[in-house]
Image 1 (cartoon, helix red, strand yellow):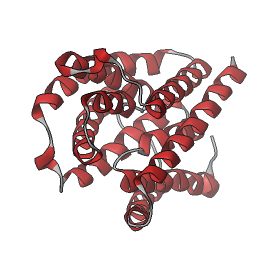
Image 2 (cartoon, one colour; image 1 turned 180 degrees about the vertical axis):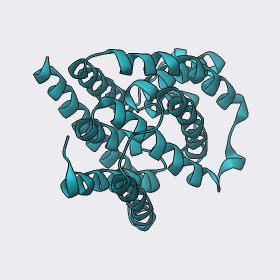
Image 3 (cartoon, rainbow, N blue to C red; image 1 turned 60 degrees about the horizontal axis):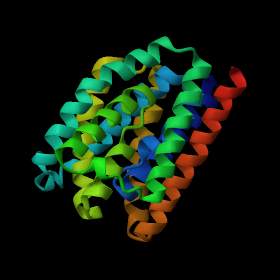
Length: 243
């Protein structure tokens, strides 16, 4: 774990990048930031910091889009996630760090590849699909800090547009991260590191809003998924090296 001003600067850079991507695409903080946060802070602290930051950013984003949330889809998604969050939190506390790194990296990489392919899965349709996606997303969110890909796959199979997906995804992220923080606790960071995180979140939000007006949706999505895949592979590689 990097310490001192270098560690704070690196932490701020990771959070700034994740926040910029979140505001640019409507989601993506966890995909981009979690692998790097896990490598910097360790699996437990990296995941809970991602849970806190991603939830806070989504609350702000949801303020202008909450009227577009679909309760019929969100209730089974969120209820299923609430049931599996404790299992993910338990796994994070019990497994050795190399195994956790390998698991997290593998989960992120697999999820990104599925989203890139736009996988069509008949089981991810209707209420049963919402329950399945929510359950997997809740487990992944508390265990690896990345709960969005299963919901993305559900949205693809439900035929949602991007405009429909973003506010509903933000609502899900807020709810599942509340459960995850309740299960995992809050990160134990020093005062200067908290200051760096908050400042980076605000700055990243401003940068993301500016870039959103100048970047195509397809280009932004490809950037997020490429960064996430690279981070997942690196994290899995470090886990394998430590075994």
